[in-house]
Figure 1: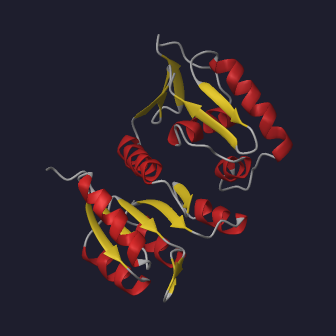
Figure 2: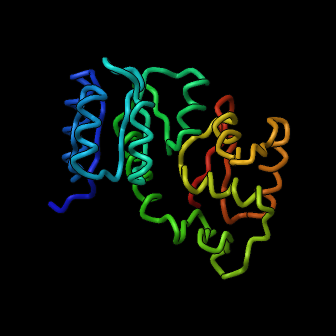
Figure 3: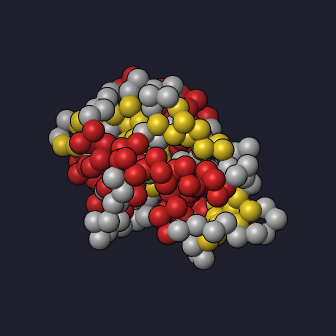
Length: 223
């Protein structure tokens, strides 16, 4: 079987680790498991990884201690942790994570998120398709399938890109707001986000379905 990519999985719970390593290897991934930050750093020095799955609470530190070294290698990052407080979620996304999954998790959903993160990594600099719209990342523009450009403001484009990068996933309002925050500190207030999503829906029409998931957030699906 041809490898689908190298993954480093940092998890100190032996039961969770053995089950997920088995599932990932069955999917065709090459998996390196580390149970603490020390062994993870050694493994990271030995070779590059397409994806890192990190627990936060580790015997000798936290998953956040590993992020700086991974970012330099352009590794996609998913946090897989029992810690679900808002502060850690914000810290993860601000630190460059593509996703944040809390335990207990459903294996099928986690595998889908892993594959989506790897697809996004491969697609950077090219295009991402979402429903009846194609986003050209190099150009910073979006097009309907008939070639017509979708007239978007800069913030609307960034919002569409967030949904495309998390296709099929439920994003909370806080997650979206933190992903919209740029390096200059320009941000969208919570009560304004509803307006921007409404405008984006109007401009996309039937091209992309952005669902409101009551009590949870929003999800964009392929039509």
